[in-house]
Length: 222
Image 1 (cartoon, rainbow, N blue to C red):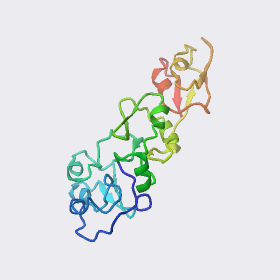
Image 2 (cartoon, one colour; image 1 turned 90 degrees about the vertical axis):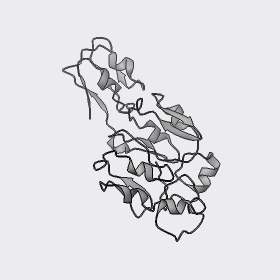
Image 3 (cartoon, rainbow, N blue to C red; image 1 turned 45 degrees about the horizontal axis):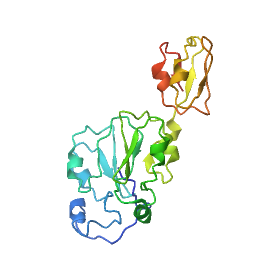
Image 4 (cartoon, helix red, strand yellow; image 1 turned 60 degrees about the horizontal axis):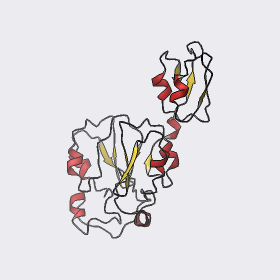
């Protein structure tokens, strides 16, 4: 949960010791200005028995979810507690681990969470909370609509907006029950009772609520 790459995060010192995160963290808490970020010396990579985590040229660890089996060895090895559990297939996540206040975060990292809470206020499903100066996603509530990804001013929330889908009503199956329209959090669906409903693609956030609620399976995600 860190996106403090070499180009995003500042260093406070030059480290030339053993290339191990635990060793580096013992020297002034590591060379990075942010004491909560990934150090990038590959301790997690070295303990992974499945070749599922690697540190690339950008200086932070990346997990290959297709290879990861959730054994937890990397979590145990990380001295910064910067590796967390996340549901398989979850594409939206907070990519920051800093517990510092916004002003201090901005001085050390350009993509850190600054505590503005715009994501908390913008989430249509109350899936984001704020604690210890850091946003946190409740994955049981998150629909991956990516509104938080759009709104975050520092891009501290990851999510590929190009993968967002739009709902579409299947005309032959729609009976006009209005259930979809009543449950849509952005009022993106229009239609009278017992008449064909339509989705406004400009308002649809791809949350799939209508898709899940439709009793006739008359909505598809495209």
